[in-house]
Image 1 (cartoon, rainbow, N blue to C red):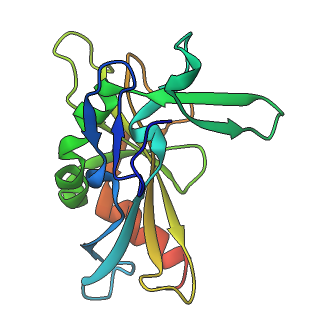
Image 2: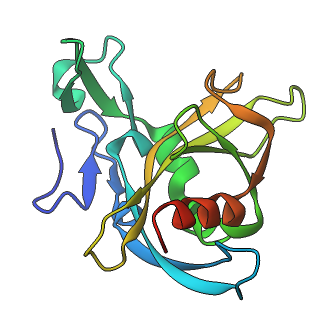
Amino acid sequence: MPFNHDKSAWTDPDTGTTYELGVFKPFTTTYEIKPRKDAEPFSVEVLVRFSNHCYSRTRKGEAEHHIIDTQQHRNGTVEERVFCVDRWTFCQNLRAVIDELALKRCLEGGSKDILYRQEQPSQVAAHDGWYLCMRLEHRKGRTPPLSLSVRSVHWRTNRPADIRRHGGQKFREILSRFAKSKGL
């Protein structure tokens, strides 16, 4: 687990290559929403956080010294995570993707607070591409009360199974509906 002291970088124990993780620090961005049709649009701040699944993947035979995290799942299984250069490379522009999300189409998951966004779709197959899996959250009494947790980023050749409304909606429409459901 060769992280530096504050986990802002990870060094490959075999090659000595260091990968900066500063892009995964939480940040606040602003989106315009309109929770009610008769109301004027207004801006809300959203705290954006990232899971280590944005730069790691399930261990597939790598040496034990490559494990960066071990996660216990509810069903009792244990997942070992290793650093993923492909995910890390894609995510170097992730902050800009999140900042520009408002007018982009997102796919809603089976749970109303789960969203998917397909980026860099393949020219070969429509569903091939990098998918961001995100969760909208509301925490009353926190500043800001709305947050977007980027749970995972990975290349897929198919859409996630729990997609509702297959055409998707603009992120700001989904965020507006979510904010309305939370009384904002």
